[in-house]
Image 1 (cartoon, rainbow over the protein chains, first blue to last red):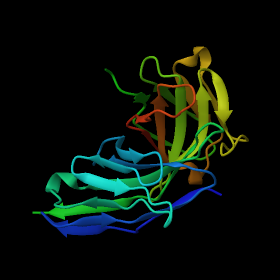
Image 2: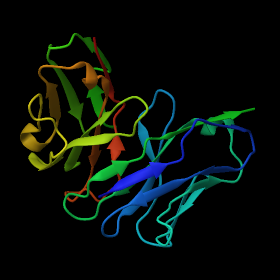
Image 3: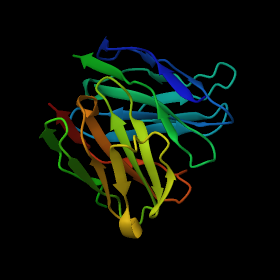
Image 4: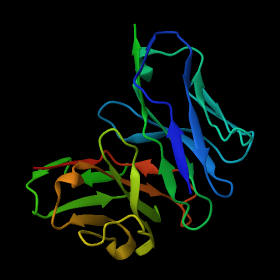
Length: 113
Length: 115
């Protein structure tokens, strides 16, 4: 089947620390992979995506590389800010047949000054 | 450009009551999704529409949940009767293309509490 496993939180970091949030997936076929972010009181927003193996998605200083050999799509940022405090969701889109999305459980990040 | 609109934002009902949620997607978006997000979990797709046709409703509890998208624009999701385990945030999302391959844009959600 199709599923996404995310690193459990919550994660608390000091400002300017390095961030990694692990995400691994199980999928049939060749899924597209996504990171969504949910800021407090707001809806989910697309952060970045990668549609094929070895693609790197990047946005707002965040990066994630689609690794087919390890079935992973880990989210990284070199220097986090307080404004990055949010819940991060890894997701995959099942190819074909309606392109259904599967989300991970989310990882809460708090960045302290 | 206006985003995905949902109402109400919050709803509290007693078990066995009925409730309905409304979603207005971004103008021109062909695909509309309803997700259920239980506290501490990721969103789970309930139903996906392409225009006014259902593409996937395999995870919709059809004995109590129903959804429609008349005229291929806005949509309603109904629960009748509600159970305690239906307490969750119900998210609506839309994407531009018919195949659902474009970016999904999410609404703010409706938080349902069933007592």
